[in-house]
Image (cartoon, rainbow, N blue to C red; front, side, top):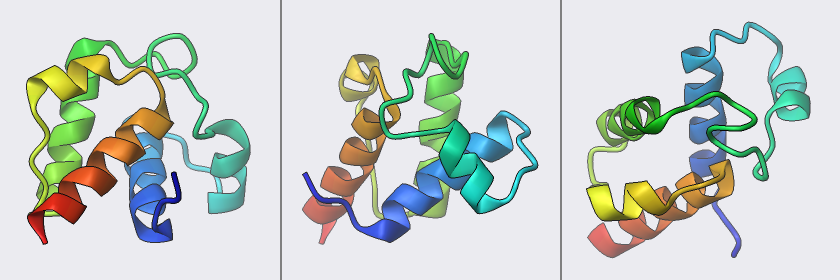
Length: 91
């Protein structure tokens, strides 16, 4: 699936802020990838994953992601997909 760059950039920016990564955007992309696993690679447990989605919902007012969908997310690509699909459905 192809994602708009703005959704992907927002997800990466939000994750880097949550993890307090203060690198340049290029360095962040080297450390965090779409394949990064939420728990194993990034240390985001279920609660932190919900926090991430809440922050994204605040940034993009037109998205609404269900708890059921959030629970299925395993990677950052899953998060980007959820945000992109939710945004597309609201248009």
